[in-house]
Amino acid sequence: MKTLLIVYHSMTGGTEQLTRAVAQGASAEPGVRVRLLTAPQTGPDDVLAADAYLFACPENLAAIAGLMKDFFDRCYYPALERIEGRPYAALICAGSDGGNAARQIERIATGWRLKPAAPPLIVRTHAQTPEAILAPKRIPPEDLQRAGELGAALAAGVAMGVF
Image (cartoon, rainbow, N blue to C red; front, side, top):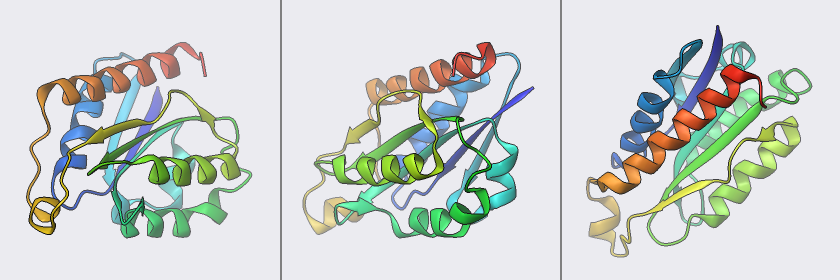
């Protein structure tokens, strides 16, 4: 049995909806166990025990969310040189861009020597005012479907040993 670890942070619910769609898509694959954990819940032992990863967070101030950064800070060195070659994907929920957060995750994953299994999935909510940015998010069905497809593809690749 292979393990897909989904690590996420969500402040307004958008990223959480997307990661639940990823988990649902991945759960359909026999032979793959899906673990969905928030960034504060996740420690180095969780990272070491997984065969593949999905890292998901909002982009805040053109960067990964602080609690996601905290996860990477706590887990980076304990996992360094121990998870090389494992596949990963990234998911960013952003107001208008998301590219910088995706690049940050890519740089961290490169340091861990992980293999990208898919391009980053960036979902833009178009929230631009303080009120819209802080409001609870409702992710459209088509974006949830894309997240589910990412989960299914990642789990299938892990199950088949493609990555």
